[in-house]
Length: 310
Image 1 (cartoon, rainbow, N blue to C red):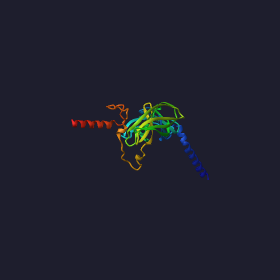
Image 2 (tube, one colour; image 1 turned 30 degrees about the vertical axis):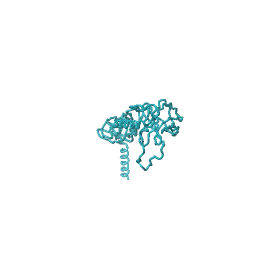
Image 3 (tube, helix red, strand yellow; image 1 turned 135 degrees about the vertical axis):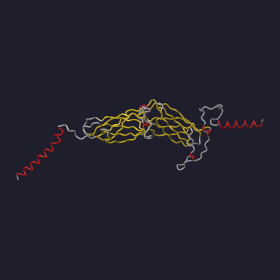
Image 4 (spheres, one colour; image 1 turned 135 degrees about the horizontal axis):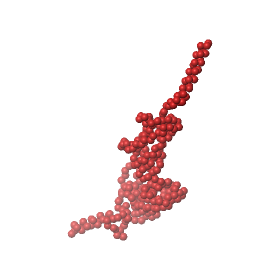
């Protein structure tokens, strides 16, 4: 029995010593196991201008309290060409709270490219782990002075009159704005549907108040018996930011069905000659707008006939 008691006592002592060893080791300065690896990557826009976007990459890592000789390496590639454009090295802090931590990096990128960006953690000249993301569509990021918060609510067309093969139409766009703007320029234009020829246009400079419905309207004079796409372009600080369009059918029988890609349409270019377009020979005041080309052809034929007679 005594031997059994000695054996049990010995086992208890061994267990106690085994449990105390980690604490003893820490007392004498033995380092715990180090680890660090990527958990997540977020992208934040710091600022944007016409050509570049400055982004902040927020890299979430899981780490031990002590991490030595660890670096986050960010490599930026042109995705289409697979060319390395730049590389950034961010040192991971040696000491921090155990668990989730963040490492941040600011990178400036041109807006007209698509990028592949890799994130790797190197420790003691070895890659611990990594991840890659793709960035595209940076050209849709606009500076604050070129942002536009507007929506189109409705479009109406009014036929004001018909004269000499021309139709005078008032196009009215109902716009709702979420901001005040004093530097907005509207461009309303009618484009012949089948030929994409610009038939008429008008420019409007307006002050916009948020929360109110604004009427952007203009009178357009176009040749009759044609179909048109009427567009409203919204410009701000020299840039076209939004385009809305609506169809204007003045020749419903010429409408192209959805299941047909092509259809011959009797398009007469002379009917779309705009008076304000500079011409080599200006027509007289009595000439009918839109018939300059046929008149010139007839005059040429007359000259040839006279030459034959003489």
